[in-house]
Length: 287
Ligand SMILES: C[S@@+](CC[C@H](N)C(=O)[O-])C[C@H]1O[C@@H](n2cnc3c(N)ncnc32)[C@H](O)[C@@H]1O
Image 1 (tube, rainbow, N blue to C red):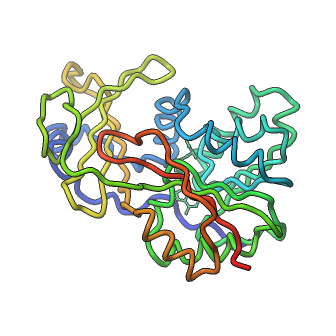
Image 2: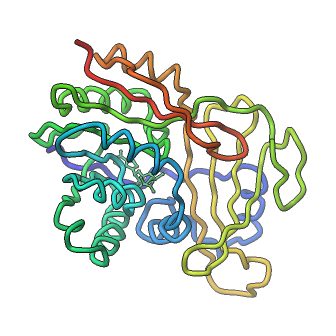
């Protein structure tokens, strides 16, 4: 398989109130990619009990046969429910920090699940596993982490790895809603570019998540601060950020058609946040 690339893109400047907060922290701020080693632990803490997409993905995987390939598996939020279907799951992930968190999660899982999982470090935009799968899963709208050439590489690799009759299950944004549908804790009203949410992780730690997404923008920026930056007097403050492209379902369907994949069905998902509805696309290799 091809060698993985670095997982940490240039972090760049933070927009909006997250940027202002970062500037206020000055030298104390330690800016991380959300999926680097430190970020993986925070991502895992925040998402450990998130069940978004799980029911829908598992139901579709159950209709397929053979081994499952999960792309961008992260710390295993979807991997464990996929293993619970009784199938072998190859969990491909780029970030070593996420793979370490996945290993930890598997270590505390029942042996009958753990022994059917093969974690693999790899890049979903260019992989060659020498095997075909009955289902290939890319959930959590993680396709949004790839640019257009990356997506072309992904779809070509998926086509090469699907067994006859196999299904590619990929979630993405179905419908980006204009403006801000929900009031954040700072009371911003409809039309705001930035929402701020307070979240409690599985550890009990509190985080403040800023989502900067001006109406019509093709990317949104998610930044996670510790919940207590106001109270803390000194010491480093870790801040975690990720840029997420908006890849609408219709664009994905066009791109996959060019890559030799055909749409079988669109399965609506529960709302993916204040600003978008998500959809799970079911695809097969074009006959
Ligand atoms: C939004 S998280 C989803 C993780 C997991 N599926 C979940 O539902 O919690 C996206 C994951 O994609 C991984 N990732 C980013 N770029 C990748 C790439 N090119 N190839 C494989 N994984 C990648 C990140 O490290 C991160 O773990």
